Image 1: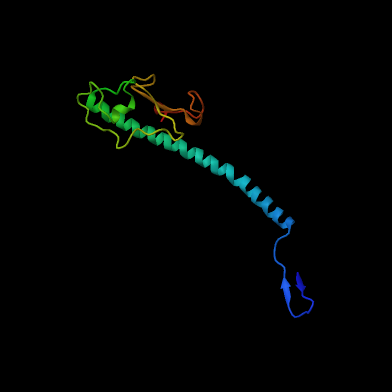
Image 2: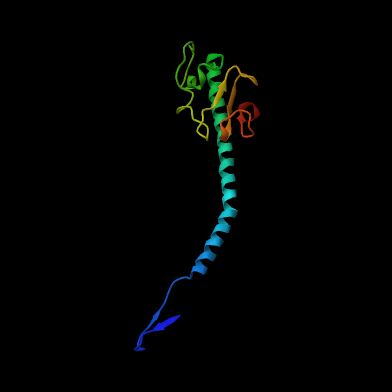
Length: 144
């Protein structure tokens, strides 16, 4: 649309979008976001589960190294800190068995450790996003 001055020697162009055009664009963006967002959040959740499985494997390897040196796994009371700091009575301790502190699970909670375990020499678990034992999102060392 052009609007000319009274003298007619100059014309000014009006630029901008109408309210309807802006609303249509916002609706299209909203529809695209509603299609993409669930897929992205599902990917994030799956990535956390894969990370937890990998960390449990890594911690299991460190626990096995501890057992090779000390002829037993650390007791539940000693916890996985025994992989970083020599506990009492571990005369053959040759650690640290982890290069860094014992990590929390991807949801920020500590891994549950029990030795001797109910499902093997030790049980190592994360309870997932809810932090409660028994949910569908639990990841356990004996199920890998």
